[in-house]
Length: 319
Image 1 (cartoon, rainbow, N blue to C red):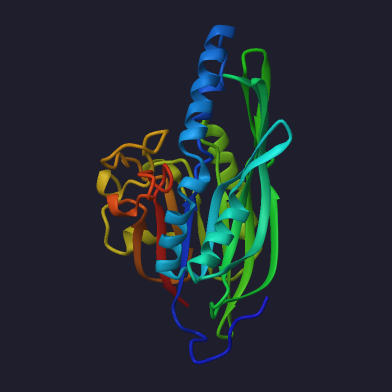
Image 2 (cartoon, rainbow, N blue to C red):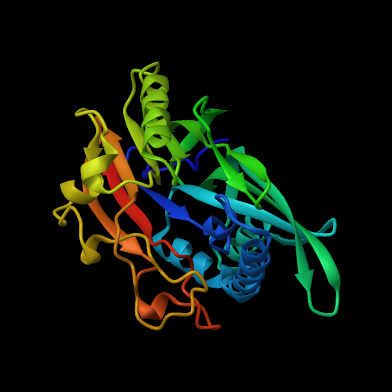
């Protein structure tokens, strides 16, 4: 994939992370529960999925990304939902179409499939419906960007948490990463996107260590983005990685730094972001600025929904 030639080569560039939110709180059906609890919780999951339907919020997401003119975008929870074999929503296809309609087209650079799951749900008037969910980590590149991508790779973490699910079964929660080897001007850097475990700190730390080891294979600058599911005092990145948010002069934690916490149905009027778990980390790159997007009431969709239960984080960087 080539970059647009011109005087912008070697100029600062923007990277971002955004967890798109799969659309429901699946922790409701994880863990040991009885049949009555499972039925009740599956009903609530279905309500949330319908309330947060991706087409109701994709234009708001696209407007934010297009406004920021992000060169490289790392996305988590890029999902496909299906019911009885028919696709309901394909987040990746819908977002790419919305970005094109917003006048700032993006292209898929690399994708790593991660978690999958299925369950039977009773729906009024339709009997039992089998829902299927598949999620991915994805990297997109702005088509007009001066940053070129010359190679990609991806992988899954060996560390994977297994939890009880739906009362009588188990689910292994697969997590992973994807990487784009990039060139700006004549200088190379890696852009890496990841999503580490939400439900267990030991698994999360193991996945972080696997990723750091993988990054040590490339002796080039790195922009590492993602949902790390850890507060700043817990995340534990090695010292050579700089937190772009803090480097840009912001407070490390607290509501004014929060990137996670909108309500599960995304319908809350006031923002409830309160935890910072989404990051841009850099190694051997200069941070020119860093900010949240999708955190203000005006960022909500026409349907009154927050774009995601997360805010996005955008950083402007320089070689």
